[in-house]
Amino acid sequence: MKHYILDTFNVINKINLSKSHKKDAQTSVSVLIELIKNYQSKYPSYRFTLVCDGRIDEPINLVGKIQLVNSGNQSADIIIKQIIDKEPVRTNLVVVSSDLEVYAYAKAQMCSVLTAENFLKFVEHSPQQNRKSRETIKEKPYAPSKREIEEYKKLFGVENE
View 1 (cartoon, rainbow, N blue to C red):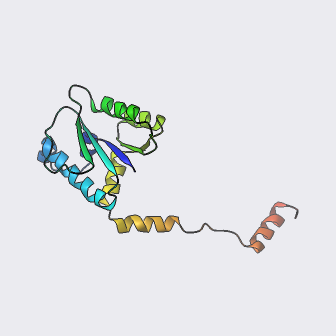
View 2 (view 1 turned 60 degrees about the horizontal axis):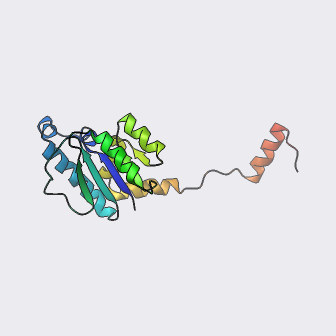
């Protein structure tokens, strides 16, 4: 089960919101939670921890496996690092931040990492688009025929074994 840890305001700054919505932290977090809820409907076992700088009230649309952590007087970066350090199995952690220090720390701790931009691409795309991209990956790579291999051997002066 994947556990996403988000540098919340880092992600919010990458969402296309009007300036008035970006200034209102409560509204911005609610918009992000709605995106996550839609994504989570496809992957119900995934957990999400949203780490916010400072203190904001818990939004009413916070449900299920979505948790909000306020950093208080500390930075969200420090709280994210503490969450990583407390986790005994880090292979299921996916840290979402475009902050280079957090990104590098998470990677060094064997967590999966995503930039805020890439995370938003994941949560905003439909499952049909994700399925199509998986199908293209499953295609077999090009393999040369026996005749082509023989021609290459002649060209490069390789003897038959």
